[in-house]
Structures are given as C-alpha cells and as structure tokens.
Image 1 (cartoon, rainbow, N blue to C red):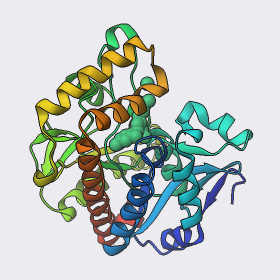
Image 2 (tube, helix red, strand yellow):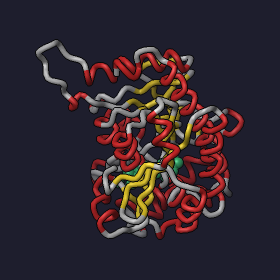
Image 3 (cartoon, protein in one colour):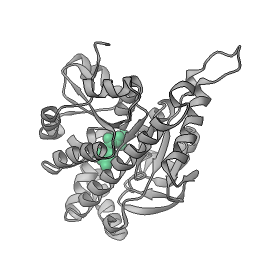
Length: 323
Ligand code: PSU
Ligand code: MN
C-alpha cells in the first residue's frame, strides 16, 4: 500500500471481491453542519449505505495519509473538530498530508481518494459550482474540474442555490460531465426540487444507469488494437435527484436567507474556501434550522441511491472486465 493512501480493511476487502462500495465526503460533516447533527448525519449516511448492501467509505486526511474509510472513533473525532479540521480540496492536499493535519475532504478531495482507491460511486449533498458574482470573483469550485477527470459517479441533489446555477450547468457541459437525472427531468437546487434547469439524460432505475456508466468507463479505456489507452478520457458523472418532497424547503425563504447571507459575507469580506461554510451556517440560522433539516434528508436520500447504484454496478455483466 502507498504510504499516503490508507484504505480501511473492510473497504479494501469489498473492493477485492467486487462488492459495492460508496465513498462519502467529510467537509459536509466538519464544515457543512453544526455539532452534533453533523456526527448523527455522518453515522446515518453510513448506516443507510450498509442497509442497502454496500460498504461506506468516508474519506478524510488523518495522520499524514488520505484515509478511505473511517472507524466510529475517527468519524467522531472529525465531527467534533468541526472547522478546526482543514477543508481539503485538491490544492490543500500536499500540505495537509505533509504536515499531518486533520483534514475534511471536499467533493474534489474525496473524488481524488475514490479514484485512487478504485471506488466508482460517491454520495453527497450537493456539489460546489460557479459562485454568484463569478464575473468579479472568478470563484468556481475545484469540484468541477475534479469531476471532469475522475472516473467516479457523484450522487447529489444538484448544486445549492447559493451558486449561480445556470452558469454551473454551463460549466458542467464545458467539462463534458454528463448530468443524469434519477427519476427527474429537472436539475434540482439542493434545498428545493427544481432549479428550472434541465438534465442531460434521465434514468429510471439503477440497472439502466449502470449500463450508461459502463459505456462512459469503456470510452476511457477502449481503443482499436493499435491505439494507446488514453486515461485522459477519464470523466465522472453527476447523478442528481431532488430532495424528497416532504423535506423540501420553502424556495422564497431559502432565497431571502441566501441573499442576506451573501450580503453579510460581502460586508465581512468572507470569500475563498470560507464562503460556502459561512453561507450554509447563516442560511441554517436564518431559516431556524429548516435548511439543515432538508440538508440531512437529501444527503440521506443520496446515500441510499448511491448504494443502489453501486449494487447495480456490481451486478452488471462485464463491469469488472470491460470497464
Ligand atoms: N454540500 C453540502 N455541504 C457542504 C458541501 C457541499 O451539503 O459542506 C461542501 C462540499 O464539500 C463541496 C464544498 O465540495 O462544499 C465546496 O466548497 P467550495 O465552494 O469552496 O469549492
Ligand atoms: Mn471557491
């Protein structure tokens, strides 16, 4: 095993036996939610994945290695650390590792780990994207380019309305990241079910999705007899499903809170990596926790779907050999 990569035994065994595994990120836990709901959510996501017959692998940086799969104690340690844990995207990894910092991986950081470990499915709440005001700030999450180069499917509830969603959709297209709606034709807006934007394709069951994902993987690895395999063709997929209707937040309430939170962020000159966690926390406070409730429920729903997709892949003929 590589000194910088540490895969938990249970996860490695499942991968060796071609059993379904689902990666989970940890920024959602350390920076995205307050204690103790964050620990409860971390545990909930893992147990929903187990219920559906897959092995969860929460990713973080601990003691100088990229960890794929945490034990109960490590998960708690991370949740308790909250924002004391470094928020680790691709550009933060070298220092987090070398200086043995405790790090919570973002979607980008988790994608890197999932790819290195050989995990094909990753479930989260929402991905980062193009921020409102990008014309001035140029703030575009590293989640997007990472998705473009990792052969991993990310299950999410779209991207948060704190972002510029039409611009985020455009960037997904530019990067060639297919956006697959699971039983939906609409690109969801995280706390709410419909952003008014569309998806690239719709699937209605896990087996149908698995065939498309296999085709995408084969595009990266296939070639005529004299062609060289071109791993630059690797690319990920976004699988989106809306927050369950009964847990949807009120769109106007979210939008009003988002505008207020954005104004506050500007006054306080909060930007860069601190922006997303700041906005999430302010919106939760301004909506009396309503946004947090939606966040937990949609993440749970995505963990369940992630496990179903991973199970479908493991049953797909020719998945291990062909792709
Ligand atoms: N979705 C959530 N909560 C979060 C995030 C996403 O429900 O905390 C995190 C993810 O880890 C995502 C990150 O990768 O926000 C994006 O941060 P930035 O905009 O700084 O790239
Ligand atoms: Mn950013």
